[in-house]
Length: 352
Image 1 (tube, rainbow, N blue to C red):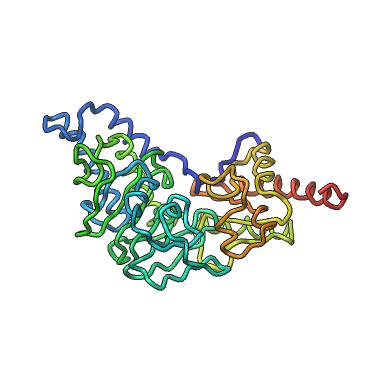
Image 2 (image 1 turned 90 degrees about the vertical axis):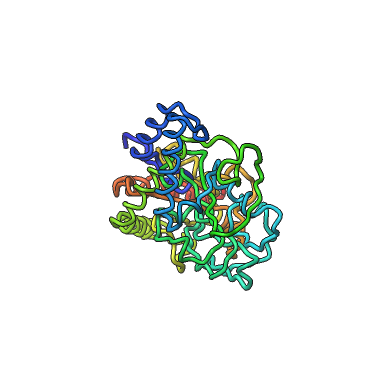
């Protein structure tokens, strides 16, 4: 293998050429989007174009989109001080603000008895498990589902949703909160009153322009069926991995999942060790959410799904995209299988 293979799309998708081009154009505009002169109006036009592109892609209205520095800030804006109920399978940016009183079953499905007092993700970043969102849900994290499966904010009946640019091939450091019309949401960042008074601070024009272009391109990919092809590759990978290692636990296998996500575990073989071994072999994968990597404890998501700690600690995630080639996954499966054989040999020799 002469080149590295990037298999960590759920952490951050590669920058789309459409997003790069939109960002370069925006960087050449010198105006402040709050200024009323021609240069300012030109910058404002880029922001509003992106707002419309994102709204169309996510099934919302342009006036519903509030730009933020990312989905983490959007979560804080939507959740701070509300004490909403959530399950431990949520991303840390959501868990930080919530009462973790909701449970989930072994398939990763969450029951929400009081939707108006709860938040529930559309899909999980570690396992790919897709949730059925109840009518009247207070908040949903769309971050991983957006661009990979069909979504419509207007049809969902949800009050608020979180999205991020870099998960769909846009730039890092920009996201948005989507609000149902008529909701009064106090600003946490106050000052100039930008973003309809909900989030002050001069807009990141280049980042927002890239976000809009990425959203339009992602919607086109979804319409063209690209993710169905991705799902076929993911399924072949899982079959290959299980054939090579019969003890493999495929997490979330019984649930509807994102088409690009494979989470599997080998009890006793630390996920962090697998990630390092695969990195040296030329493959970028993860041992869970990128935001929780480096922590010593096993995944709260997998623990909530009932996986024993020894299995949860042996889990890795392979997440792919439309640019992933079958050859990349074949080479990964071969390298992973070789490392697995060495792990088994060490165990058989009593050296653990």
